Image (cartoon, rainbow, N blue to C red; front, side, top):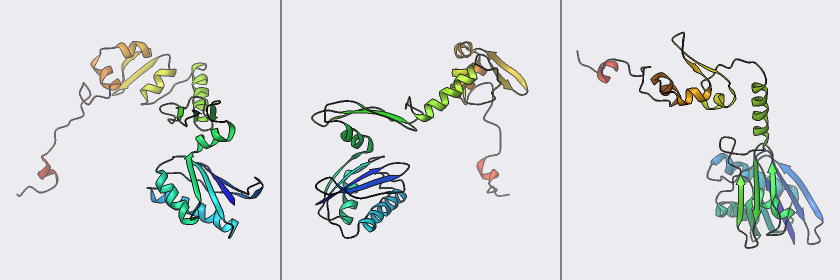
Length: 235
């Protein structure tokens, strides 16, 4: 009996076929895949990957398929597609990070840390409960990943160099700026350190920091009623 293993990632999908003695029979790589098979583009890429594997190994009988895939969605949808190409095969599926853990540790032993573009750590208990940390994307976490490292490097440069940054991104700017000026109507509307501005009760500052539509800067302007504006008003 031959076994097929697939590691489906956001950059590429790698696969290998082994026999019962764990001798490698074939291996290859295809385009990126993910488990969000409810999306037509993801489903098409998944089908293309399985088709490429099928063509590469010919009529070889696959008795078991193990897949770890990023964006792990519906296990049933994933299994249904695999069964279409390899009917009767035993199928085991999981996230790609869980598959990586199982490749390095026995259950209940060790912590697997992945740090690429993002970062995530996982431990799987002896009763197969997955405990993870990170993996939320750069907006919510992924400390130690490539994006985070690059952003921290830019922050370090900004903190240690005299520079002027023009931006509307208050949160990111306040993390690296020593002094801030708010410009309105060609004039300085407010100024101070990030801490001073965060504590300010000035209506102009609060409207900007809180992204409020109400305040000294008007967002509602007088205009004609809807019927007149669309030329629907009968003359």
